[in-house]
Image 1 (spheres, helix red, strand yellow):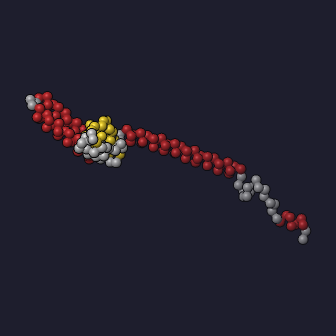
Image 2: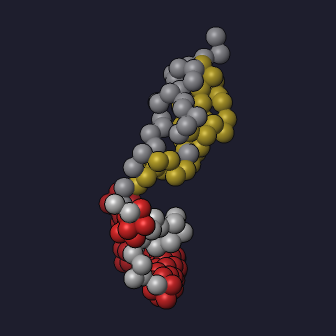
Image 3: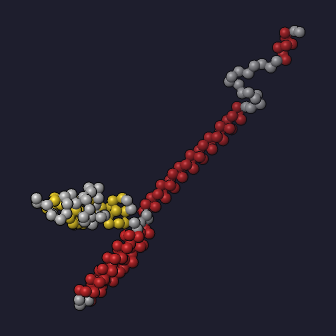
Length: 175
């Protein structure tokens, strides 16, 4: 066998830079690159649009978050205004007191239905996480470190404190 015949039957070894399929041309690579670049640009634009829409929706949700709560509050305000109008023409204070008590009960029920609870105070041990001590007094009846009376109510929403109760704490008896 002639070496020249043998070398002609074996195709030349491709170089690492050359494509494996000689039929794929540089034009095909450019077209594929342009197609992929277009897809990447579209995906980026879609992502930017999604981010903008998410920010817009979040801002709108924040802006109108209390809408339902305020709708429930409106009838209470209406009743309060009716009570004020009645107070202007009422000759006695008893009817004003009755109207104010009705509005107070309605407000408390509104708060309860929305998960707001009063912070327990009188007779309770002082807890700086729930109570704000505004004074200390001697008390023969209330043990030291316990609350004698409440100055301002405290409230919590479920288990989160909204406002601490302002209280007067016992120093114990004078003895």
